[in-house]
Amino acid sequence: MHVPDGFINAPVSAATGVLAAGAIAVSLRGARRELDERTAPLAGLVAAFIFAVQMLNFPVAAGTSGHLLGGALAAILVGPFTGVLCVSVVLLMQGILFADGGLTALGVNITDMAIVTTVVGYAVFRGLVKVLPRRRRSITVASFVAALLSVPGAAVAFTLIYAVGGTTDVSIGKVATAMIGVHVLIGIGEAAITGLTVGAVIAVRPDLVYGARGLEQKLKLRVNGELVDAPPSGPAPVAARTSRRALWITGLVTSLVLAGFVSFYASSNPDGLEKVAHDKGIDSRAKKHASDGSPLAGYGVKDVADARLSGGLAGVIGVGVTVVAGSTVFWVVRRRRTTDASPVGTGV
Amino acid sequence: MGAGHAHRLYRHGHSPVHALPPHTKLAAAFAFVVVVVSTPREAVWAFGLYAVLLAVVAQLARVPAGFLLKRLLIEVPFVAFAVLMPFVAEGARVDVLGLSLSVNGLWGAWNVLAKGTLGVAASVLLASTTELRELLLGLQRLRLPPLLVQIASFMIRYGDVITDEMRRMRIARESRGFEARGVRHWGVLAKSAGALFIRSYERGERVHLAMVSRGYAGSMPVIDEVTASRAQWSYALTLPLAALVVCLLGWTL
Image (cartoon, rainbow over all chains, first blue to last red; front, side):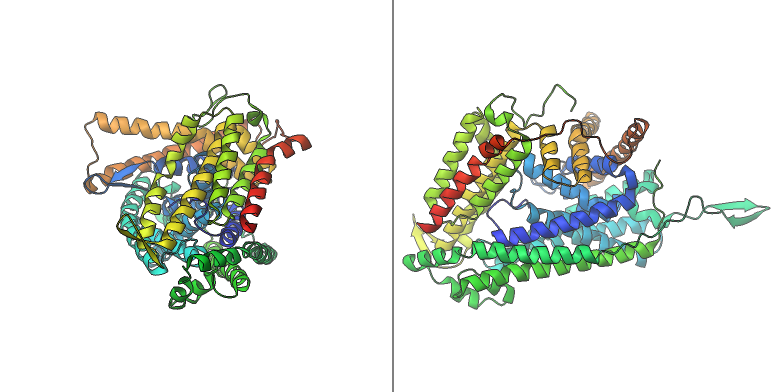
């Protein structure tokens, strides 16, 4: 699913880039809380693990095989913030070193493969763990479902990005059907492997599975033949409640300005395009999009009459939707994290 | 990846392109791709000129064409996708060799193929003329957060170690007669992945302890700060500026 250069237009690439940068900034702070000063080596090694495990092919049926995306797996094993960081770093390195995924499409790739898979996977996982009985088996089941939903989730995110800024003229319906259909299948494989992997880790080192931290039994001491709760060791975690509003507002304003500017710059495009379209008599596009149901698909069209306005609108709406969606999801996850009061690793 | 042996992606050399500071090369490659992406797809000749520009860079960097073309193979999945596009896209249709193809689909396929290929070629040139360590320094110099650079550098340094562990586990599995043939064998593969995770995580803990015992307190000392003179910047930015001229011509013509 690595998107190459030129597949998504410039304003939307820029907007997703801003979104990805914002999410990475939040994750950097979050990962410091999850891992404190051990962040660099541990997240680095986990990123190397994700990189390696993406090469682990599992046979699906005769002759075909799939490989893990690893977003949900990373989120469950090391926590959502570290997970986003690890997968983003893997994607960044794949883009720069292996030319796998375009440089300008990095934002798109990080948004749908690192952020969406991890956040969807972890949100589903947390929800299920809260509902299911507190046993090890439920962790495995929850990871299965989380991974199962995370992959089609990424496909949906990709389809949305494509609907706003796709450069090719394949209808949204076809893209959605193809992407989501294929990725439901991939999701099944991903889910099975993720569930089994988490199960295998839980069997050996349950303390390493971030998602299973709430499950450990309280240490009990037998004092005079009675079971008593052991006194808590180590200081209670202090919930860091720094205001993130300034960050959000800055990010939002920057991205809106950027998208407006970039799409303005890019929207001289339709004039030339329109000319060619008229010349070649392939002007049937506007009609086709008019019949398209989704309003966003309409906004994304560069070739409608008022091209400049439409381009700018598409950029701004794209940024608005993605930033709002992204911040809501992060807000929810953060709320969940802070109310969770699970012990934070104390470091060495 | 210790000193002395470079990664297989890197091609050792002493060309003027190799000698450029890494952050100028990163900026140039990125700016080049941005310019390519914002070129109108109807300006077919512009993409030809871009390819010529990249060929000149490859020539300057003494990267042989065969090496470059082999690395371009990573793009093959998208070629398959692009080939499908004329068949599924909407809009007016045209008959080519008896097949009914969509005009917009053909343009779309050309768009993705041309821009994608140029992007891949630019990244390949960047990776083959810049050492990994230099790339990371360049990223840091370009204001990527230091923590992210550290994570990336650990991933790069231990990537081969972890991959080798995975390879050893595969050899261990195979020497016991295991062959993954279908869904029934997923459990074994997943157990390997789990074991790999535990090994990686524990290695990370050991690495951290080793770092702490050598005085690590949360940030890495930068001992080889890279700087670029104005001449080097302008030399590196020749590529995107030339591309920009082509792009502007593409818009106006």
